Length: 397
Image 1 (cartoon, rainbow, N blue to C red):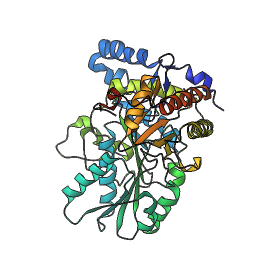
Image 2: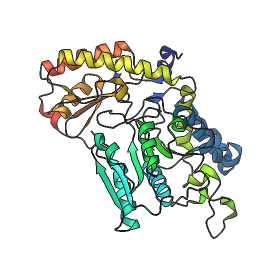
Image 3: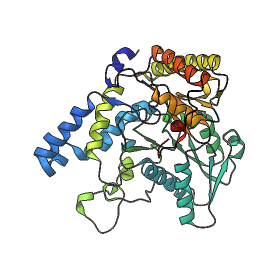
């Protein structure tokens, strides 16, 4: 079991704030500032370039990858951290396509995060006109897994609605027709139990700044299944993915296993923040987290629906079919969310009409749900959102 009262004390949250936006950016763990400061002053400041060896900077991507691996059902030695999520999507998709050279179709859905689709468009466009990105409705994925599909590329949990794909079932179906799978775990890692080995996933990617609480701009991770680790070819053949980076050979030779998926120089200071955040996750049982998340979200849905008939549930009603977020539709959702934020309930908005609320038991409890429902009811019942200042769109929504 996990003591969520204890984990809440490990985060630095403003007094009186109900933070329901950890699905977009996790809050600051109390230990992070000191951990980052030590990296800056004691390691960079005192060791200078010697920090790569003395402080173990070069080993961080693999070591932190293994710690994330525990949360996503990956064996040791098959997850590495670094670069951005878009880069990791590109790497995984390119490697999977090279393993199916006789096929030209990438299948995805309209609920996928647009950046993933953009990366696929760019890659396929560079590969040539014969390649196709086939995008269908989320509920139509299964019937579109056909024998011309090279790669099934999906985000497990829909970023807008929280709708969750059945990873194991869809992966099995893809394998039946000879396709490979790339799973984006941006809204899964740290939110729901994930079993990459049990689901027989081929590739997976994810970010660390949402539920994993590593901070804005924190690096991404990539997983390659054991059976593919030494044959997946990284199209982005960065020098740190080379078999011997400091031999400075003229030609590229891929490193062994997951090391070949390293690309750019590790972001050492950001990795220090991730290291501090993962200290909390090392104490967390994912089954207990999932049970607590469902309890919180079910209470939230019941409270909001009872008090706010103008809000329509956009997430699946069955908790087994959604991740760790709840979304409601409202025509003036942007303004309503700004009114909530002004009153201390922080969620976010996704066009065209989605109000999103994330439930992270590490620092959210039932008292927070009760308070949030009361404030949402006040804002909606009294039309407190209907003010010009709440309708002026900021750059980030």
